[in-house]
Length: 225
Ligand code: CMP
Image (cartoon, rainbow, N blue to C red; front, side, top):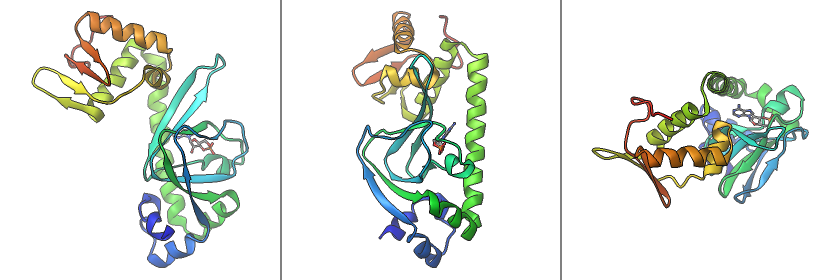
């Protein structure tokens, strides 16, 4: 059964049935409820997680206690590999965003698995390269964009992932909280609320319960703040 579930994880996709069978002896399945902190920054790392179904947010706390979201990981993705590879403490916090099913690989088995199945190591490296690229893009945004432009960029992404385009506007049905937006773009909930309200007053967007209407393309037409 677990071997069948493991097929859903891209990293294992090139292994033969036999190999998956052998590998499945190293791992266990775990279901964790929404909102559970899986581990915290600075703790020793004891396992790597593969997401079968659900979602996890990887985030940091600033000195002032503000949260910064580094990544939102979904089905088929993994995390918790860094501290197992470099022996350092956890680099970030992880919390479940919904009830989530995992495959868990314990620290002691991790290196054995990489030695036995180099293709898994290569796939992890590939994924880590993508994450470094995304982290570079985030650094660039923080260094070069102000909070308004970061919010516009965030809205652009939201329009692409959750937008339904009508002739003159786009409806975003995602029930996203202001605090989540703030954590994603490195600002406070109050600032997000203030800017969204100001855009609503200017007629660029309309805030409705559980959805938002965007009247103008936020990239083509740079809004005035
Ligand atoms: P680890 O340091 O063991 O614990 C936290 C995990 O969060 C880390 O391993 C990675 O799997 C993941 N992580 C840390 N930084 C990022 C990032 N910038 N993007 C995506 N995932 C990350």
